[in-house]
Length: 287
Image 1: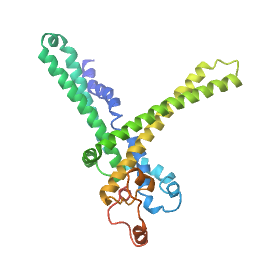
Image 2: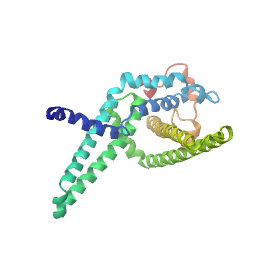
Image 3: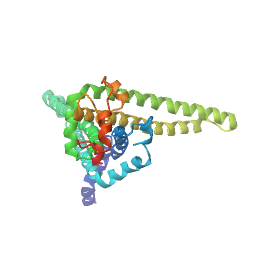
């Protein structure tokens, strides 16, 4: 029995720490990001009115995202998850040591201070890694690059546009809060009144709670997609401005207005459209 516990203990601890890594390393995020990235870099090819609807947002890009993640980027997802899990395991080990040395810390304030400093540093490392990996998966979806190169590009993005990233995160959090509150509440109210009107003999409390909980799960998924789309479009716009300067090639007029750029002149690109593709390698070519 002791041998079985010894063998299975590491796997049990890893399984406990693994769910905490899912928020920092999630393959669905890469799948979500591939669709808005495909839409963004299709702008140069869609000059017809409302062209954004017919190109880059159909069934093929939505099915192509999961296929690319499964066939090409599954190792990247696993590696990112492993990094977060290792840090989580180290934090769990430090918590165990902290609990075992409570009496020693009560009699030694220096030991208590050192333990709290270690815990604070590991928390900061964990949060930083989750944030970097969170955005690196967008680069994986857009450029099809590896894990380390994508993390390196995220450092450059934070250095160049850290303030805008903070604003994007705040806007995404506000949207998520609004969606998570309004959709379940509206669904619960509608379900309650519908049951009261159509089935007056049935107690509407538990069906209403069930509907609200299901709506909450769906609303959280919608909010996550919104956050991913906001981050992905910003990363694509940043890459476009890095490659093409103040005249981004693929940016729509609405985004140009948001970034306070002058209205783009696509005449030069229209002349070259029939001859060849643009010279710089675009992210959609690597997908």
